Length: 441
Image (tube, rainbow, N blue to C red; front, side, top):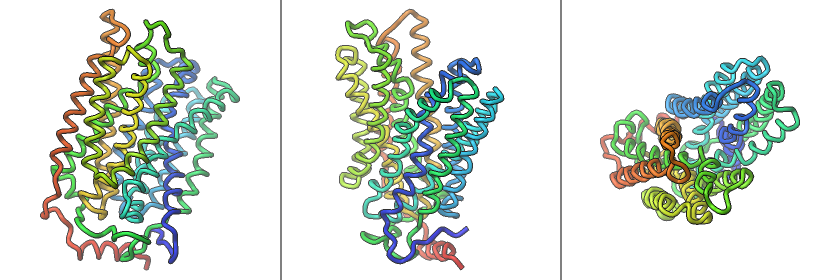
């Protein structure tokens, strides 16, 4: 399947909306918590069981991105977006059948396994194309698209809640909500499939230097370099720190101020979660765009170094003032989002554009690891501390210390990143031959 080539005069600014149509849809994953309480009530599940579809979806995101990255590079963004559309929407339809028949394993299979594959392929589908269209501003370009993944929950959360209120929160209402999600997202993602184009080979993308200039490294060679694994540690540390707050945000702020004169209400805790989502989204475009000016290594020094400082402030003084707690958490979540959006440009700087989508896919296994590690650290320690009779901020002191340690490790890994040795570079004739093969017959 040949990638769709842009006709002469095609505007590169049509590509970010195509990417956004996919990322805003798959960003629904961050709104899964809306379905947790009704599922637990309708299907008699506990909290761990109701979290399983989301956890499996994040694991499958990393795995499908890793194993499918080369196919995405070979077949192009339209093929990848089509696969993402089919898998993500089908996952909702299978889940609808599972909810209607009260077969929870079908929801796990649909949303977690099938939908998770759609998440992974959809997440990496536009990355390589955007970098090739915007070689002069790769951080901004990928930030625009990946911002959609962070912001998808801002649309999906109230929309899903309204559907459950209208359809009912029993198993039939949940099934109907899943069905509407699947059909609506299929239509929405189709816009991206139809709109996306790749730049014509050997032609610069409107302005700026050619994306093919400089170092070019294949995905197979990239995973054999220390630079790849340093970045793997960097991304894993940054994501673990962010998701540690994001996954438990509402109960965490409630626990911190439970003994104060003004405890946090349920509605205020929900508002805090919405603020975190906004910071997550804003960080994806803001910090990644800043990285085009100050450099990728410097921006990750900010994410990891200042992130550790924010965790330290929460641990020491977080329960003394709500504004301090909220501000530190917002900064951490902006770094969480910024880390996701900046890493494709960091990979482009180190490995070139030759197979950057495939390399990015392999790197996202760090997200799968962090998606399990972050919630496990915070929840397991909090449960043990609560069983020991502790409460309030004491539930989180040890887990915050671990997060600070992880961020320090990530900071050190970032400092070890150096230019890739010439022995890993792809020769120019080989890349030219690959570009020639991508042209339609």
